[in-house]
Amino acid sequence: MVENSQHLSSDPIGVFDSGVGGLTVLHELLVALPHEDFVYLGDTARFPYGTRSPDELLAFSLEITDLLLAEKAKLIVVACNSATAAALEHLEAHVATVAPGVDVIGVVMPESQLAVEATHNGRIGLLATPATVASDAYTRAVKACDPHVKLFSVPCPDLAPIIQGGFPFDQRVVDTVRSYCEPLRAAEVDTVILGCTHYPLVRPMLQRSLGRDTKLITSGAAAAARVERALTVRGLENHQTDEGDYRFLCTGDVESFRSLGTNFLQMPLGNVAHVEVVESGARP
Ligand code: DGL
Image 1 (spheres, rainbow, N blue to C red):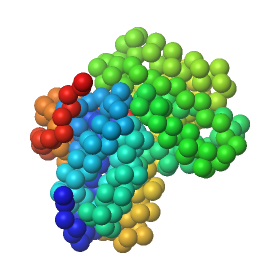
Image 2 (cartoon, rainbow, N blue to C red; image 1 turned 135 degrees about the vertical axis):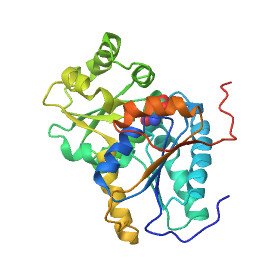
Image 3 (cartoon, rainbow, N blue to C red; image 1 turned 45 degrees about the vertical axis):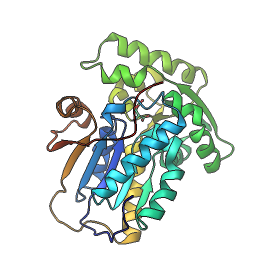
Image 4 (tube, protein in one colour; image 1 turned 180 degrees about the horizontal axis):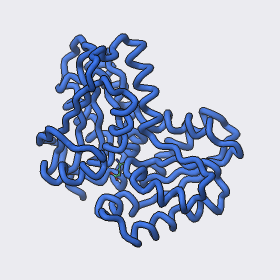
């Protein structure tokens, strides 16, 4: 258990994901909040999350949240869509108990709000992992924003692993992207939520498959606005005038994180350290 502590505006924002995918979210946060410091934790030892059960996702998310609180995170971004979908409410309740004053920001509601604002024909598509689609979290969030909007969800079991293993991208990635976009074209959606941290990396392929007029909604941009508001309301914005720092923790191999992570962040990675997790990642 992490004890409550007073948070300072100079403390970092904690961000976590199942692995390197959330670096696409961190990238957007770094652009939107250039004066903030960030500590990012990638649970690479237990990737992928997209086929995990809700109980596993909750246990992993609680453990990682405590690790970020121990790093003095003043706010926590759950960059992983699968973790947000399964665990956000539990994480909020947990953090309210162990570290009052620390906000927990997920990606499902901010993305859903942006998508609902963007659609004109009231037909939104969702591409996400099987765990995220099965949770119905986006269906509930979109409905809460506007009950008249219809969500068409496509579970994409292969897409995150294929993107992760696919550098440089080849025809197999293009074909996989196209097959998952097909039902959304048929449903005539005008807006598509990229409901997984990996998908922004194949944005050009998605845009081509879905048509150039389809609006693509990413979670980083959506979450950044919410993070900024939360920090302002709590008076926790970092007032440094220089660019903030960012550093990394991962539960798996440090060098693999560094080499793969550079592709995802599209910026050099600095300090990467290993951190141990106790919850077993073993699959039954
Ligand atoms: N971070 C995960 C998500 O956004 C990527 C995919 C995975 O771990 O299966 O759902």
